[in-house]
Every structure is written in C-alpha cells, then in structure tokens.
Length: 72
Image 1: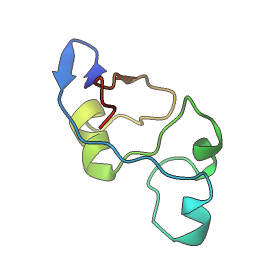
Image 2: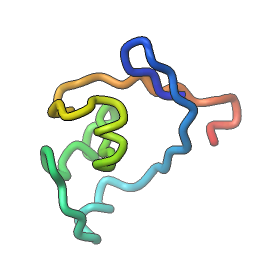
Image 3: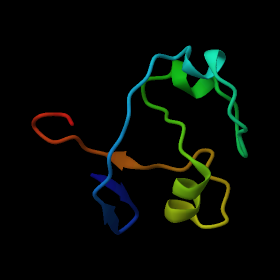
C-alpha cells in the first residue's frame, strides 16, 4: 500500500541493491541515483511521480509505504 495525502493505492514494488542505478542507465527527471543509499528514500518512475504528485517536483515529498504480512 502506498499513501500520499488522503489517497491510498495498492501497488507492486521492487527492491534492489543501491548499486542498481550504477549498473544500468536510466534517465532521471528529478534528483540523482544516490537516494538508493538511504533506506528511507526511493526512486519512482515518471508515471508514478505524475500519479502521486502531478506536475510537482517530488523531491522532498513523502509517500507512506506499508507492506503486507508476506512483504510481497
């Protein structure tokens, strides 16, 4: 589950090693790949950014992420 403001979404998430963005090149609209070094930060796709934040810059914004019992 991901919560942004009053909106709640059921989403599938993927976990990766912090070096993932060093091995592969992805264009980033906002920020840098370094957030993967912080356990409390995430990298989201452009479409996810638009879904949760519209045209706003998502840097510094908060998403609450809650995992189910099986963490899948």
